[in-house]
Length: 219
Image 1: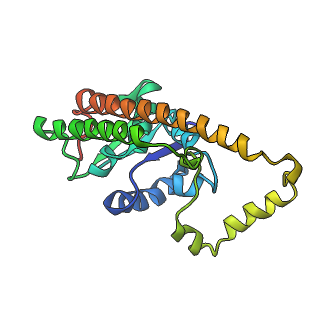
Image 2: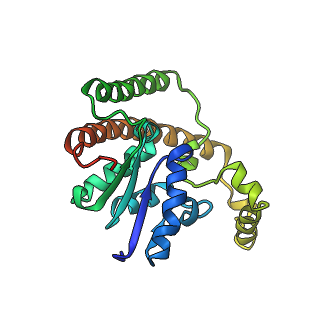
């Protein structure tokens, strides 16, 4: 991984995105290769793999907001950063005013939020009797409807055209029974993954708030 690469970790929309829109050209003008999801994660790209790349980055600009602290993906990115060690050295945080991390009572509110998320997930798992295979889509960058409209669906069409020469013959298509078995297996994998995923994010929130509070100061 090049030392000239700078990764961006942020929650989409609002002030966070506005800050990234401003800092991106400044860093690029200094000949840094700035890695940002909306530019470098292609259509149908693997989101989890990309987040793990962020976590392993030599330098990561992290925009901390209330939305960031309540986002599963953002907490996963921070967990990956922490897992790759030297967190203090590698992160360059910008803390927005709505990120309530300095008072103990506010910090507890975030922990309570993730406790409720875990409880809600457990409750939904008990009532789930069907699954449409969304675990795959969860890890795929499908782009937003606005992104598709803005490029006149060219990226989507190019992906389809790229597939046409590699279409699976109908004779090799999975049977209905096989699809049902795959769905059941995916459901089991999803429930385990989601529970572990949220517990990991709660663990990361504890670490983020307890270990790096002094570092996360907006000048």
